[in-house]
Image (cartoon, rainbow, N blue to C red):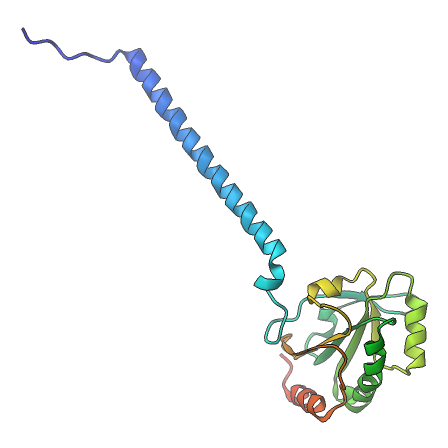
Length: 204
């Protein structure tokens, strides 16, 4: 006698459907958790390896910065304040011996090329409350180019500096054309030739 095939009861079929639905939901939750973990790992790696992944060097765009003027009523300057200009951006401090040594050459360069549009911007990273000391430093050395103050030192992080002084020559297109770590003779023939060439480039 042939036995009839066993039929699954409606309740069993419903239970099986629920189990498969739960299993599928668990799989999606696991996938979502993995995606979140991978995203968090990538964000952490980008944060901690930013200097290696996005180095600030010749050929890269100059990072934005914010600093204050030394006027009685300080105003804010940013990189955008100099858009379209050739900029020599100098990061320095009053207590830095090599900074003091290179300042006369920066002033000589400013007197030579400032009239042609070169913007020399020296950003002090002295501590908050050092405004008077920075002003006195500027008077003592007879500096007539723009001196700014970034008390938090954010520009050092943005430009990945390793000390002071460090200087960045930025073209009209916002791209770094020269980077110098340590003091330099900025009024040398080589530096003046580079900056004179950049000044002939059209505004972008």
